[in-house]
Image 1: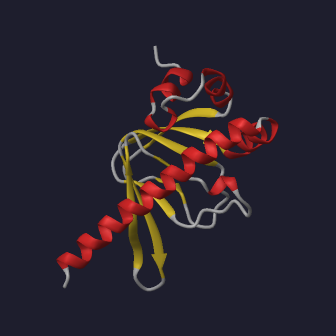
Image 2 (image 1 turned 180 degrees about the horizontal axis):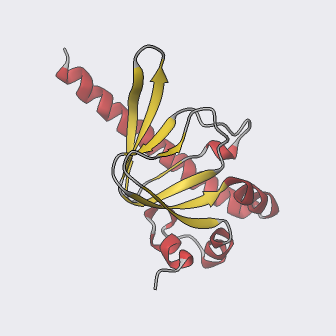
Length: 153
């Protein structure tokens, strides 16, 4: 049976997370699905959650006036994104659109902020994990940009 706690424990983002924290996080978690083409959120909307992607692929896009959407990065199963819930003004800086059907777990930002304020050790553990993901995302974007430049000298 798929329980949220088991799904959280098995996601690479939370690998090695102490059991007591997984129990806390389960209270902030929800299973979600998105159809191909569906937006998870749009730029400027309230950033309410982090997304632990289980399956599928998501395009992170920036809208450019007169040019439409520009792909910034993609996120796939086993990855996490969405750390804007961590800091005010809690607004998304880009659009997220499912490229193919997506199954994910959301971690509700307001709930997480409350739990992190109540338990600073949990907050520090999550912050370290999110910063690692920010670094990984920057590295992926860097490699994508190098590939684009190589293809268009």
